[in-house]
Length: 102
Image 1 (spheres, rainbow, N blue to C red):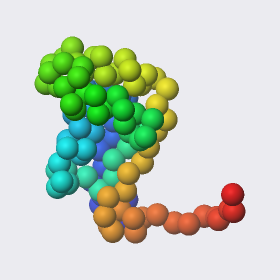
Image 2: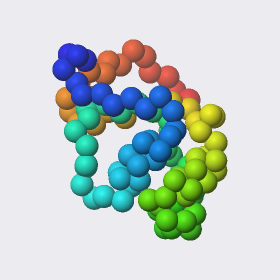
Image 3: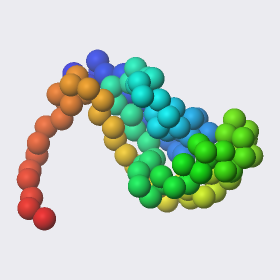
């Protein structure tokens, strides 16, 4: 079943990853056809820096300089890996292994 999924894997937080995250944060519609996306985490810890970038506070968001500033702020070398399962087709591949009460 996994072989039938379209998977996008980002090896690191780089300019391609930034463009993907920004596209998903600024568009009401899903703009990609991936069933699973794997890459650095873009969460509440990265939100402020990404919002500054989107708002143009780091410079023109189309420029390499602004992206480089954003990547320095995010400290990409310490971002944990994230898995995003998009839609029922991808979620159907998941299997519950155990439950724990925290």
